[in-house]
Image (cartoon, rainbow, N blue to C red; front, side, top):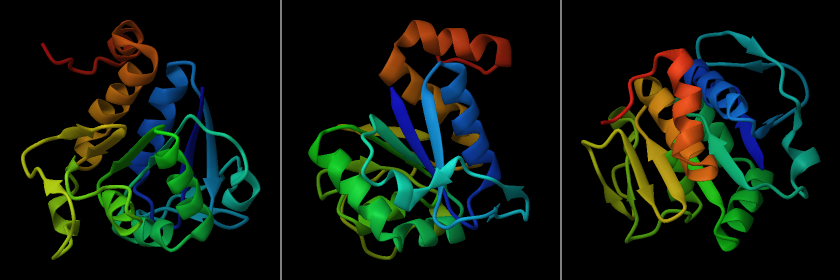
Length: 185
């Protein structure tokens, strides 16, 4: 399975790296794509090099896309037309779409989350008005094929939930065990 993780200037390092790492540990093919050529400067000023750029992968077929958050990163993702097209295509094909922290705002902005969809996000980034049903207490929410999560402290749980959805509970447990990540009982 091929998963796209777009990296925009201002993305939250913990979320991006944990998602990429956990999905790769599960044997998934993860492609990172920056919005422009060159280094990506994350929210805590760490520098990252993506595998490719979003314009070079926009015509590729992906089984899922997972968006890391960070307030500035999410704004940059939301403004990218190529990513908007990829999200709409995956929604139409009923493929997995994930977003954490501020990134669910990207899904709200582009109509990926509708009036009947439950979601969560970092409460500091919640818009004044939105469609959908915000769940303030949930750490990870699934609504159809869309998965959302709160922030850096939920990144492992979020990524492992995606692993379970794509690869099964056995793989989730296999990936989580050597990392000593607490598992739900």
